[in-house]
Amino acid sequence: MTTISVARSDPTAPDARALIAALDAYLGHLYQPEDNHLLDPEQLTAPDMRFLLARRDGRAVGCGALRIDPSGYGEIKRMYVDPVHRGLGIAGSIMSALEQLARAEGIGLLKLETGEPQREAVRLYQRLGFTRCAAFGNYSCGGGASIFMEKTL
Image (cartoon, rainbow, N blue to C red; front, side):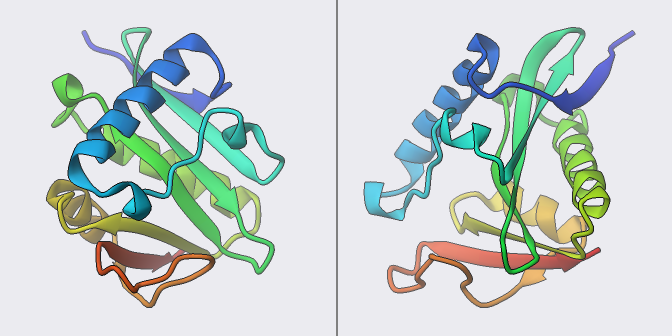
């Protein structure tokens, strides 16, 4: 029987770094460098960040992070599931855990930035109740590569 677990983790640990590197490579094929808004593992250890790792039978297969914005919303960052392990509900489990973290932090609104080439991600976020919204934070919508979404918890 397969066991999926999602828990807070150190983004600088080797298995987390490997997933983040795979995500960076994936995004590097989809977008121009100026359209990528990447955070490295060290940035994910900041006090305003909460990093989660998903494991399947003990093996790291996915990750996601919550950045707590000083204005009161949470931003979903670094969502990724290894392609070999997609279709098993892992992304949904990560998002559910991130929503629980946000609620525990007193956050009632989640926001995220993604892009048209990530059609599966956009569909996932829509299924989970996210809707399109205006650009937020330090993002600009000038290049047109980004899609911005939000969800009230």
